[in-house]
Length: 515
Image (cartoon, rainbow, N blue to C red; front, side, top):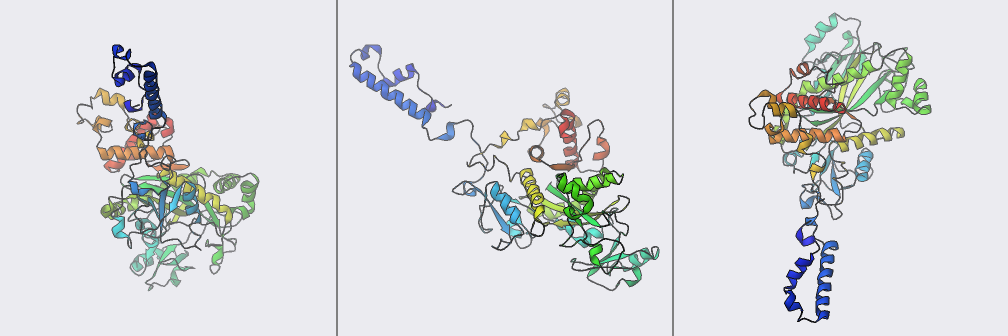
């Protein structure tokens, strides 16, 4: 406590009166008592009624400009395009933001801290996106279209995607490929996914300029005879270095409204998931697990798989690997696209749509930017969407309870400080890394880290504390440090991704919950 906030001692009071004992004898006792009483009252007022809070030690500092909070000190969000009164596609986004203390503002205002863009904002809002304030966050990464473009992704020759061809550019490759598979079927898709049909190779329109063709997986895994797809929610919090999480609380399962067999290419309800899909709670074998015993969609499905004497874990191991490989396949393109937007804080919520064959082989069909989060069609999905959003906002710092405290001050060290990221203390001391950082053993030692590297590790530590049900899938999670082949994992990684992976490995060695 500063001196101005303290009750004065007897000697200090005596000095302030400015008289010695001899002089006090000459002053009437009533005057002395009145003066002492006034001094004591003044000290009490300073102690308990002080309005200058700068002397208090437990203050918070967000680092936000004064203009970034409203009169009520609420944080603000904007939407793009702006929400209209009758819109319901963002009802859960808006609802959760309001629950955690955010207020809506216009996108033209400068005091929003979160922009939730339902459409890609980097074309029409390009200039603004290049000049974001340090306190502003946007829910898309520049260049994410390299992953979410259906044509680009399908024709990327990834091993877990059904073989696909652009038309007419890859006509010759398709003809050569289909000659060896005369009995195969191919899905012909409009480039903007407005239509879909299944055809044998001989019936494909090879002169089309607005479609692509993809091999059809004709042996799907069925539940009670219904084909389905799996929607897995994925969050990217950083591109360089890469940080990827998967929501582990549940998965969106959507079942075709009609049974797959007898197969009919003209009846798309047998093999295409539309808006009016069959929900988990309407599938007979899943209903008991979902309704009666209260399981999630994923838990109900896993229970069904075990009923078939199969192991569902092999599915989810594939899913995580598919997510990692897909993002890595386009990572350099996204990094290039981000160069004009270095000032910004971005994150991305994606939905990976996958299917499963009867051998439990997982295939990626597409990746959705701005996935549907509206429960207008299926009210029970509201909980899933709200839990996903709550997890995402906490992970990226939007939903921090300390950040939304009604004060303009907040010290970030309370959550994550440099001491929280220090690792390899014995090795750092042994190699005297505080004196020289030339040895490779010193590259993770705190005295040898650049400011930008410290920021990256502090961000990783913050996300670890706030991930809730977000499972980290890159850097890859570990069963334990002893079972993790570190050298194999970092062999083909960039310097930044390698450093982050090794840091998580060291944290895992210190505390298994970090694995």
